[in-house]
Amino acid sequence: MNAQRAIAACFAAVAVLCAHGQLVRENEQPIERHGPVDLAGGLVLDATVTVLGHEFFSAFADAWRELDSLQRYSVTVQESPTARFGSTIRIQAQGRTVYQALLGPNRQQARELAPNLAGDIFQQLLRTEAEQALTRDLDLGPEELP
Image (tube, rainbow, N blue to C red; front, side):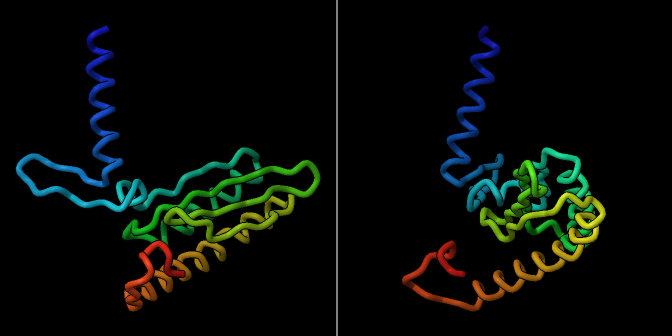
């Protein structure tokens, strides 16, 4: 029972540090982070539930890993299946929804669409990052810029 309390206390301490956006290593200065996305950059998360969604995710993840070899962006692929029309696919990157569309029930079409979509989204993220680096507006925070 005491071991469970000790583990719970450790998790609580980590949660508090993460919530404040600051991690500290031994004998080092605090590391500033900008949320949970920065803690685990380069993740490609699968939140699909059907065979169609898994096929799409597999092709998307393969293409994404080739494009983002430096693992700069974390991406989540979510799926909401519909009874008659296939699935709604939603792709989130850096905490924002960057793509949402209805994907028909054709698995081959999903495998062909995914690599092109990964390239388009990656280019969009690079453009957005460049625009944010070049845009300095004192009235807007970095999360408010387009």
